[in-house]
Length: 301
Length: 301
Image (cartoon, each protein chain N blue to C red):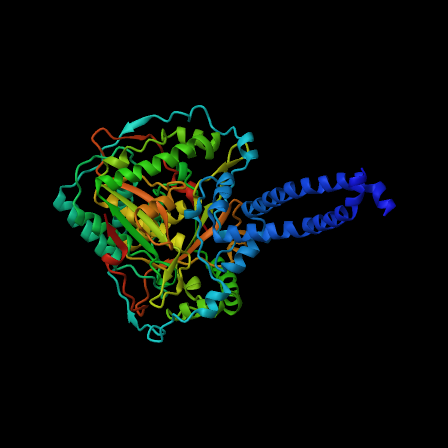
């Protein structure tokens, strides 16, 4: 007790220090935890994947803007600062014509279906190029155009892609998805055998560029890159439908890194979608789905 | 000093308590912070906003599959388990016709521009309805159709939306975005004054349904809802362009919760995009952008 008495001033000092630490420490911890979340560290990514099994690292919109980026940023070319503006006067249709066009386009798009039975018949490459040109007209955050379309027609590469996708899909079905998801998908008879990856004349792999690379080697921020590339995919699907080609809108789970390596894509590109493209085979079948009627998807105010 | 000596045992006890707390507290904080991250609480969202200012809570794909969901799931109606399959044989065009159609559609879409000068002239509601019907033909994860299109033509509601968006946008510009982003956007002369929100005959607010509600009140998982709704937006943009209407593809930062409340949308719906829609005004100007040429966006293998 006497010993403790002597130590009392020290104890008071330590006590004050600890109280101070207690107020500082949680803040630090939060910061660290936030950095993990935002940096998309592998561990965090794994954790996220456990709760949301279909969100693999290649489906996260991991654009980064850090203080460092901002400090180091010097990519704004002074020539670009004031892009000149030009008048815009597109074709204007009379009301009757607008109505007619809106009905026709709806009728065309309403015939689109996801088709897993794809014919091996060849498709002109010029058609595919025009479809991709069309996808490239999509808007994008700050006009960054953060997309890369890799078109595979080489049979050997298609087969390697099939092997990668099927291997991962089997694991997904057996382990990752859980009974619920497998049951949901069972209704539309999809499983891990993806014959169409060999058969379709083209596979279009759509990569989002999570950031750009400037001529000086520094990173350029790609705002909203996942939404932008998904919009571009929507326009691509419309373009395919417009020429009578079919596809399967697929987001191969956990295959992104392997496919990126196979196709030698740089680290800033992450796989968003894989579309096998071709004519439907003559015996193509689709589930007898209905779409929601207009009144179930629109609200007028 | 004598007083402190008497207190020594108390001080030692408090000291021990504090040390213990120091070891326990950070763990709790991390857990809490992780829960916040995944739960998308407002506080976490604000914090996340600091690092990635354009990712507000309404832009996170926060579909959740938890063990609880799986255990409680009984939404698979046995009638739905085996949806019948039907033959699919869409219109097939000769090669020359395909080429021509692909070129025409590209030419049409390539004229699309983001236009901030929108005419107040009325647009037939039937055209807007057809455009939204068309957007509703998009594919979606497990055919969940996770979209709601809220179409505003009421001037008072449009004005309230403008007030909400402008207030948040000004904060974004002044505080959240950072010099870098403001500089990037300055190049295309955008700021927080959004006159078109009053002027455009329609505002289309596109909500993603992060989960569905089953008749029994339980949650239905919406796989890939953000990608699905973004694809639907792409098709909607194509449909608008097809009838000669223009829009601004905008993702109003941090306005989602306020707009959702204003429009009385349920908690499972989160704002993904806000599109003012109308004819371009006669004096419309656009930045003199170029799009990347085909060879910069495609790779053939």
